[in-house]
Structure formats: structure tokens, C-alpha cells
Amino acid sequence: MRIAEFQDYIRGLAPSTQQTYKQTLWQLSSRIKGEEPTKEEIASFLLSYAPPTLNRHQAAIKVYLEYRGQPWSFNRRQFPTRRRHIPRYISSSDVEAIEGAAESEDDRMFVEAL
Image (spheres, rainbow, N blue to C red):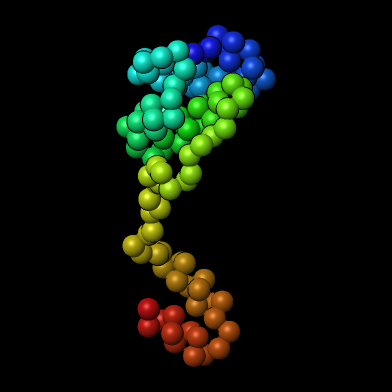
């Protein structure tokens, strides 16, 4: 992989982003057989990470492929996504705010029943 040349390509990015991209590419390069990664090697590499880390690695590899003039040939559904946390309860001040926003007595009674 052309990591040193790629660093020149991303020179305008924040130093922390440059470092993260470089680390990702070194990790990827240690897992591939040839000089450049195949689509299958990239997919295998990305699937070994949890969603929060996966997003960071995807970004680095997308920019590297752009630098190499290659398309990003993956769709969003190929990789797991981060589960969104839905709160199990709301605070009493939130309940009061919702009650206050209710326009009719029926709406307020509905909110109170929840």
C-alpha cells in the first residue's frame, strides 16, 4: 500500500485524523496478501470491528480508495450499524414540559396516562 504517498494527499486534514487514517491503513496492510487490498480483504477487515470503530476505519479506507482512483464498492447494509439507545424513562421535568405542550384537556389526560 502507498501509505507514505497517501499521507501527502491528506496533509490538509487535522493531525489526529491523519494519524487515525495512517493507523487504519497500517492495520489493513498487515492483513492483506498483495500490495493493494482486494474488495474481499477490505470487507473482512471491516467486519472484524464493532460499529463505532468500523465507521472510523471505513472513513479512512474510503479516502484511501479515492486517492487511488478506485470506487467504494460497498453498500451501507454490508456492515453492522450502531444500535441507537432509546431511553427507558424520561425525567419528571420532561413529563411536565410535554404536559405543558398539550393543547387540549384530552391531550393532557393522554400524556398523564402514559
